[in-house]
Amino acid sequence: MNLDALAPWACDPRRTRGRRIAEPPAPPRNEHQRDRDRIVHSGAFRRLVYKTQVFVNHEGDLFRTRLTHSLEVAQVARSAARTLQLDEDLAEAIALAHDLGHTPFGHAGQDALAACMRAHGGFEHNLQSLRVVDQLEQRYLAFAGLNLTFETREGILKRCARRDAERLLRGEPDGPARRFVAGTQPSLEAQLVNLADEVAYSTHDIDDGVRSGLLAVEQVREVALFAHCHDAARRAAGRADADAKLVLAETLRRMLAALLADLVAATAAALAAQRPDDVDAVRALPPLARFGDALRAQLLELQRFLLRALYRHPQVLHNTAHGRTVVAELFAAYQAAPQEMSPEYRAAGAVDRARAVADYIAGMTDRFALREHERLTGRRLFAA
Ligand code: MG
Image 1 (cartoon, helix red, strand yellow):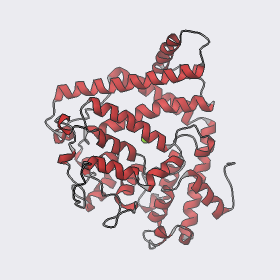
Image 2: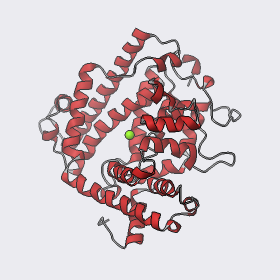
Image 3: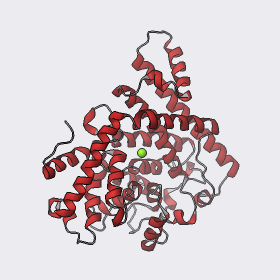
Image 4: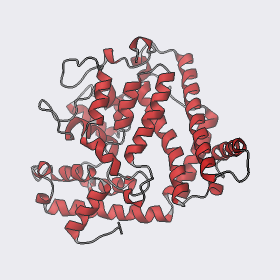
């Protein structure tokens, strides 16, 4: 991309705050492209393909996984970033890394691991994503982690409790945790990725929900945004007996396009009103990336529907409850017998053992966690 076409409020990779360990440039790639490439080549990124988004990985080959979700977020974020003259490569890097810290079995796995770690400093997937790129990936001779630029790390640390932020700041006073104490915002590229995440899951979870048979199209029509796009898709199909699958695909395409267009228009309007001088001015202002009020309300309605009808569907809860048990029992098993972990996690002393166990479990794919659980407990919880 042409860096001279970036808006003044974009994150120009030529003006990065840099890496924790200085490295010589690597032309022709700029620093944000390099970050993106490091993420794509990481082991944690490859493992996303076998991690649950909503449906446990073995439930079907056609459902989204953390990997395909991350690719869809990257696509939405890049489209928005390009239109707004922001740095697409940075938006892409943040999007591809945003879920690297997720445990197996989605939110159930995260909740179970957080409960196990309550007395050992806690566990939170946003912090874990940063930990993966800062420490856990082992691929370079000169440093642990991927040694990413500040801007990418700032975007990856999307949420952080004040207590955690204060702990992180003791190790890195000007690090990405600072904004959670200072009350400032991240770059626009990072703000956009957060909203692109909502655009992606709000549309693709309907698709997976209907495809799995857990949601009926008539039921989703309770949601105004969906009903509106579904009516338009039916009209475009022109026949009452049009293939329902194609009409659904057309509906979701229209929804995604409407959300993206609104995100770009509302953000452009906020930028036109504020005209920040540079990215530091962006950080000091309230959030500038946004949906318009009307679409924000509709998106909220859609997300409430998904929570009620899909994420809390008895079948989803049944499977995620198993995931919770797998994670809790693995944690107890490795605490008691650390030699059962792979060698790089075994070395931790008694003080750091719980953290090493959490890192090991968090990095697992759904199916590896199931295999390990069966090996260590002799029980099989999913009929895979
Ligand atoms: Mg996500």
